[in-house]
Length: 423
Image (cartoon, rainbow, N blue to C red):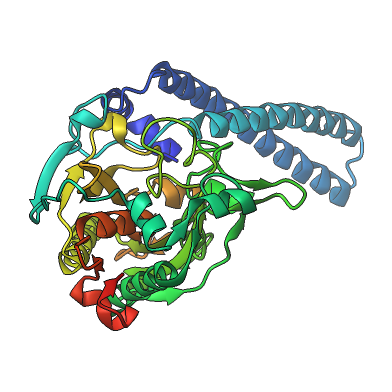
């Protein structure tokens, strides 16, 4: 959420950023600024009334002490009238502040200046590509057929137990999944990220703090009786660890990682490109989160991008990095890099990681601050990234590494699986 003072002081900049996002309701900024002016006017009147009330109350006290009782009734009457007026102004102020808050929750983050213009996925900017795209034989299979051939992942069984988008991993498929999770965590911990085991359910305040609510209300699984949400990513509980915290400068940066299942109601919806592991309602992911001093946020983002590049290089997967255009940015993001791996049988790129900086958009909601070099309290910057999401990594590994002997396991993962091939 954008700080109110920032919006007030940067009206043209905000509108320009929202235009880059192709945000449809630019007039909401004018509405907010007009409402803020009313708020400040009422606050000034309220402060004047409260100041006058205090003076009268002091005068009443002095009159009582000096025995001058003739003016007390008149002064008490004035005080009572001022208190009544103050109550009315306070009620107006509360209504306006609630409306201001509601409006601010509808305004997305402002894109970084290097975010490209654009209206769709096709306008995202490719900034890096690595690895050779394999040429498969005609008899090569899609990953969902490989899963059935080698009895690795059962989509029908998951549908029987739960529903579409909840696959069951079996045998070497389950072991490969576990091996990749452990490998990802080891890479993150060795890079200085502290590992956490986090709840897979969060309350409404946590979901609001990282921006899932109200923007993605209806896309999260909601347990109504307990007012809890299944997490869409470990980012939510990890970042909320520091909600309402005042950090010392020497505590920054904070680097966290966690494995979790992720739950998304919309992810497995019907339509094109949802077969197999391409889109699921439940999937496993390892996440990295950073909390940074603002001046270090971009270099931290670059470091996260390079960290994920190293992982994909070790997995021997062809991949590319896209800088997302304004319209493709998530609601909370100021700058996002998407990683895509190439799925050889499907002959298309699949997103497997999204790395973003949110600037102080989340920390304003979460009230995470730090004492800067001058000892003043300032908002931190937050960042997060997938490191990595499992389903599409596995889909690409299965399709790209299929051979006549079976599915070859990348060398870096063999110590974790204990086997070289799936056959």
